[in-house]
Figure 1: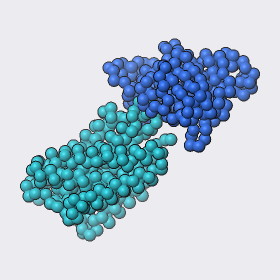
Figure 2: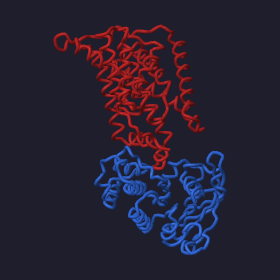
Figure 3: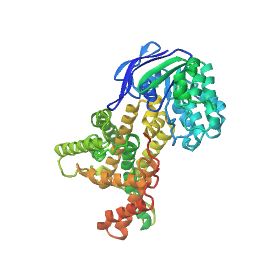
Figure 4: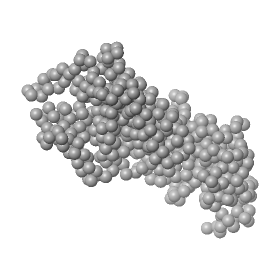
Length: 235
Length: 293
């Protein structure tokens, strides 16, 4: 479904992706783990079109999407939930969901909003409030709900558990499973490597702009290098 | 006497509000100060004047024509002076300079075409007065200015609150990248903001030209400075703030003329604006929370 071939990208003069290649098969949850600054976010931003790769190719459903602008990539069926969620704090909860459907022109938008409010009742309760008033966990629910309004076929999630209370983290991973069951392919970037490997079928480990290691998530979970660097001792 | 001043103040304030709404729209969405706004306002006034003298069309049609012309000018400004700089990712000071360049160009162009002296509207649009009650008079012109200004500000508010474009404008104002992630074409929305702001400026130009029955290449200068003062006092990026600030400035000026003397008009008005800022530094409707990222 998604394939990166030798993608290189820069932030200013800093080479943050030193030629990475990875694949997300249709219907899969694939995770990208690694230390801070390894280039995980840079990889997602290159796929979503937030930064243009200097070289390499990004293919989505067989089409070359390298260097397309953000909005064009969204319209093709890829939606990213960026780190920090990036909800529209001054707009109401309902308007945030409407913005999620911005690229759609069909008549089912209202129905989808109702469905998402059904799934996340807190959003229904606070539909008219500015989204900035929601708690961190609620904002993450809104960010996910807003992303789903675009009916993405591939969802890019950047650190969805960051800064959330433990119950909210559990809820986020539960939702990831649920979405995947509904047929959404997911590329998940996480600091929480243990949970990320549990929820995914395949994983890539990034180190300083390169893919250092990859394999089935179940195997990575037992790999001594991964355990030592990212999983630590079992709590 | 007092109510007469209130009507005069509201009329002056209504045109200030229109000019300021244009500044605040561009600032809110693009985070830049459009220094060419005052000259687009002036060009709008000339377009209105040419329409009235050339075709004898009614005022509303002249305003509509000026809005269309000024809007087109805004589109060109965005494509030629703003978007190329944005693509380079340069600092926010660069568009400040490029719009100053456009502003000088437009003023020189108007000088060349129309000459430096001010031009009057034909006698057919001279004011007629209606007596409201007792000593209070309102001219047909004042009614037209108030009516058109109110209609435009309400239209802008409704557009921002209810329409797809309005939501996209607010989303880009808050977080351009997140808006892009929603599928919003950020460049187009930014162009729309400049076009709308310029159209408002063009309408204000015609109304001000009618109000003082004078259109000149330098008429934008004072309005530009006041428009900037208003959006700082009203709260940068807030349309409600631009309207409140505009009306406040208009009222302050008129009351200063009536009760203190016309030579102190600008001094008194700006003292009031400074006083507001001392009490609330973020402006009347200012939000302390800025854009992220």
